Length: 163
Image (tube, rainbow, N blue to C red; front, side, top):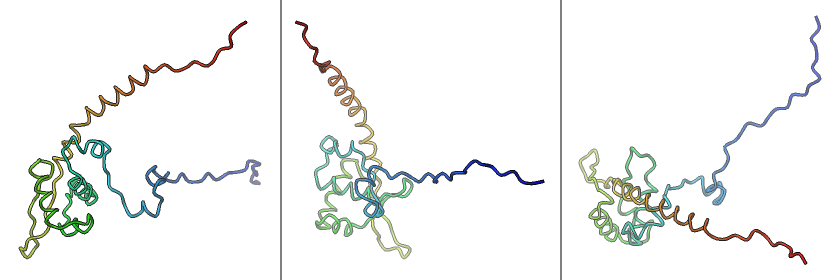
């Protein structure tokens, strides 16, 4: 028995690769490869409503950059935060104290295996709750903008006048 040869050509399809995210396309693969922090637009746009001054906002963003896993809270040192931002450790300490007083951040003391004090663990549950609480306001504002936009008169095009 002879094998029947097919006249059909087999075309190999390329394996579907992961499409680069819009953020990666903006910043480029090399920059994006160093990581990114998830910062909701509501936090950025609602900074004043939340009651964050620019330094506190910067500290929150820095803490979010250290928060890789929901189950593992960030624990950078005040020194590291101060070096990243370009301020003193005392400025970090005072502003974190204010964030804690506002209920946005909670510090948890941490010790080394030898019993020495280590960097704090920062719980951002208050900040997350505050941003989530703002979401309905942002949704309502978005719906109001859409309603106003739909009320705008759009020209239907020019029609030639009959003579």
